[in-house]
Image 1 (cartoon, rainbow, N blue to C red):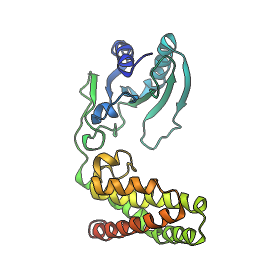
Image 2 (cartoon, rainbow, N blue to C red; image 1 turned 90 degrees about the vertical axis):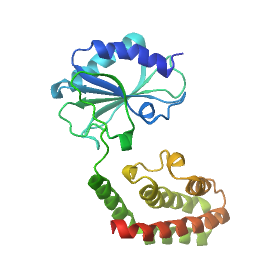
Image 3 (cartoon, rainbow, N blue to C red; image 1 turned 90 degrees about the horizontal axis):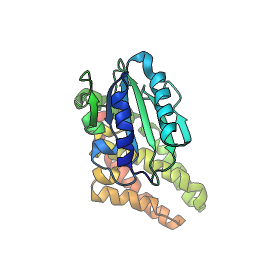
Length: 254
């Protein structure tokens, strides 16, 4: 079975030899230093604008000579990030490993390179000195944070009421999805703005590495409730933390 390292050794020579690929780098866990044996291969390929489909075609032809593509998902375009992205599941690899391939037009202004958001990529090659890991401008961080803050506070009273109504009714299976939504969306946004505003839109990914012990423990316990009484007790803590953060961050974003 091929490991992630094996895949790099197989695919990298293909990328280097392909004349229409201007740059190639590994992002994801390779860039954030969070790689383990389960990490996928997150690869960005920079090309001239007119060469996107050609590179995808070339890549698939190459992969089919080495593996069987068992599943494939091409992200519909225009995608939220402006890139062309396709996920490949292939055979003969260790469990949980897949290919996350982004083919990026040279003219695309946002290539997901900011080191404060995406880490520092592992560069395979860069013919035109394209890669630039400069951090996100302070004003952009503020504008993102303000947008997210103002997106959650108008509805907080509604979702809190619905959770408390569900608790009063005593039906765990009915209230749990709404409760979970409040944890991940409302509280999650506030915690991101508190601990990592440059990645405020990342949801709860990597929260355990960024939030600190107290808030990480709060989130983990929130996911472990299994009875209506446990949910009620945990929601009191969640709501209290949310209101504290809401007031603290109001001076910044409101």
